Length: 73
Image 1 (cartoon, helix red, strand yellow):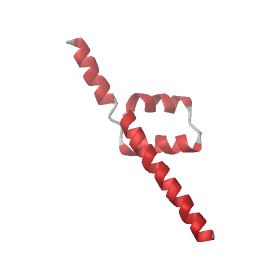
Image 2: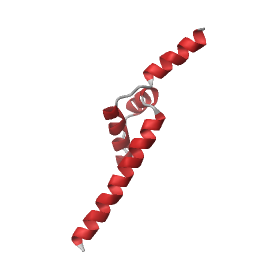
Image 3: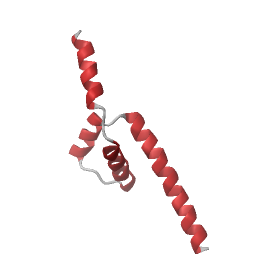
């Protein structure tokens, strides 16, 4: 019974906000992050959310670079 309760608590901790996930991915793109903030993100953010936001950010970056190149050339 206590193991189920522990899993429920971990699931509740993992419900990070969308804004926190976006901030974590943005910091990862830049490459700067405090160790303590990184640990907080590991505890609170769902890994699937990080993957989804990271893919969206990647495609936005690629499309932005293509747009800049087309605008300049």
